Length: 205
Length: 137
Image (cartoon, each protein chain N blue to C red):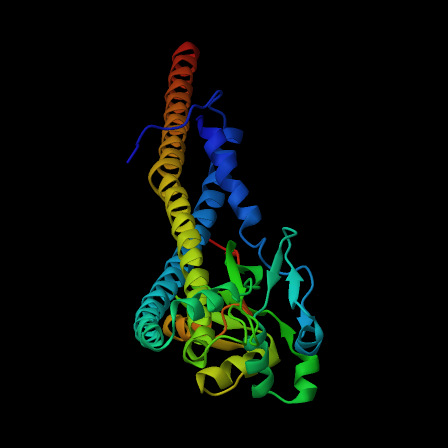
């Protein structure tokens, strides 16, 4: 924690009032950023859980898909396979942006009918394709959100720490220094007045 | 970096913390009729809704409510009520959230962190957070 105060050009009462106002604002901002950080971390954890679940599902689906593919290899000739690959269409996806508490993340949706592999392809492969595409795009969406959220969590954490450990302690130290200075000045003024009073009474006598 | 620069930089955060909120909310009915259901945020970016989510919400409410339900549902973060406390002030929004969570419906609806996790995993695009500044410190 930095206990050093801020640089004050003129130690005046106006400056003290200004510093108190700044401290109030800094505390308000600190609370708000801390709330945001809590929300972002929570969102990160929700997405992380979802990503783990989808990855597991993807592995299971791929396993089934590869099994089906291996089976198809045994019954289809190489020429049939080449023909099948040549008929694969381009994948069309609708991609947009969503906003998670200020963090922009991708949103990917797969149109439900006839994409990816043409209808001529074998039934053994087409039975898995829709599900597989849905799982892969969902995983891409969640993992891209995870990356964006992770970066934002780090950014917000840095700001919260800057406020908590640098700015607010510095403001407090400066306010304390100025208040002490004014109190000292007041005490000096009082003793000076006392001294003047003493001199005046001595003069009268 | 000098102190006042750090301060200026940090205070800027206060201005942009709610920039993800919509300029104008749209009704569920309106969004269901759009090809790409979206709204424009305060910072000028687009926020796209998932059609599957819109259909899910539509299945929870009546046709009349669908005309009057404005999306996204704003979830206000209210730490002054206790840490991890959130409030939904919109009557129809509260109705939808209460139905999704299976809790009693009341306005304003106060929900907590574990419930938020459920809501955000079920309705990630149709709900949005709002940060309410502290009125007193």
